[in-house]
Image (cartoon, rainbow, N blue to C red; front, side, top):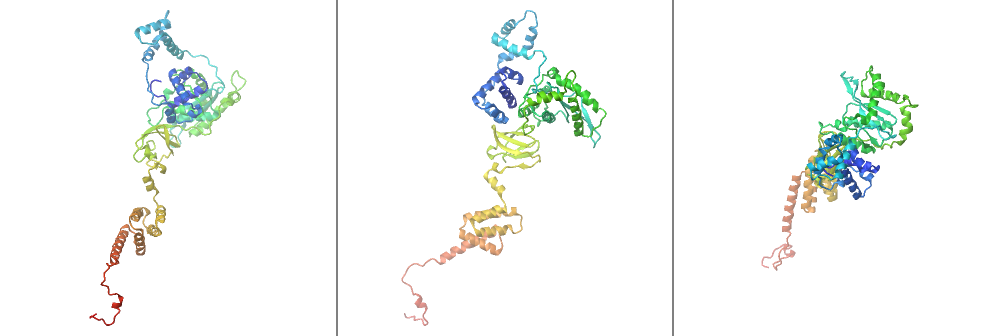
Length: 523
């Protein structure tokens, strides 16, 4: 399994094909990886001892953690050398007298450490099979729709500015019945392409086994850093609906000849009907397209005793898989470092989302849709938020904060009065009067913290007496409490000195002496 780690969306395609019973060679050809890569992933699948449906239900970071434990990637130099010669070998085999044996001997002369004859023929045959000419295909009912964008566009007029807005037209058809779906979209961007595809599946009332789109490399958008690769976005969508992707080859319209022919019919039966009509919204345009498309599907086909819709309802609709209850939402991917305030910033919205404080400084992988934000660290889901597109705001879950920060957010008059009630009724009365004084509650929080600090350090009898004094004086400041406590401390120490008992001695007159009216000094 050489080279870079394969995208997990592609591995899910591999698992779905394996579940359907496809061979390793067929899987490698369909998803565009080497046969050895398929072999290694299937070996890992057996070692995991997990059901394929359980693996398909995992998010990409979780699945990647299951399959990749840090195994080193490598490239076989023998194959790299041979790969550069495939075009030459293909042309040489057309020459008189040239066969595989002679090509292998020439190969070993130039590269003595190369493949043996068997491996050489294997790789050469694989390449030649991939380049074989097209043939007439027999399509199974309900197996795969072909999708494409028409070369020409429809338009509507913006009622505010009078501008003519050009709209690409998405066309899809099932090759067995030639049942057609047509829809105008604002652009050929990833969002609009996926939206049209989902609308097509809803129109069909089920999902097929395979999807044949136009070559995806021609539709990759790199200018927008927030827009995911079309391959991955389309794979995510098809994984959601249990569909395998079999893209057409580059510049090979014969791979999807039926949808190419369908586009020509759409030009005649839809485009031509709209040439003299003016629309003022995309919605109005699509409503008319839908009516004309329905008429097209219900038109009797040439040389056949039925229409497209009849053939679809009878032969293909029962074979389609039921759609999931939840429609697909386009996923976006990003990597962010968890800041010191245990939040990550989703730069597309300039909004902040909390992460458990234990992951501060870690690199988090964020997968977000139009409604949800999921945050992963080391392949584990650590936070889930509802997406908020308000810039500059924070979406914080209190459980993600450390105890000190959580305490800071929990502060309120009720919180401080509840704490005071558990310590002393006098303190509760003092704090209650403090918050009823008319100042904003936030200005009293530090005063309450000071009260609690004094309660820990001062004798409770002195503290309660000081609270009574403050209440009677109607002065509730922290500094006033300190003065009262200092005065009470000083008075209590002087009283204790005055009441200290005298030492024992015999020079005691007694109380009778002081009761005399006439004092006898001679006594």
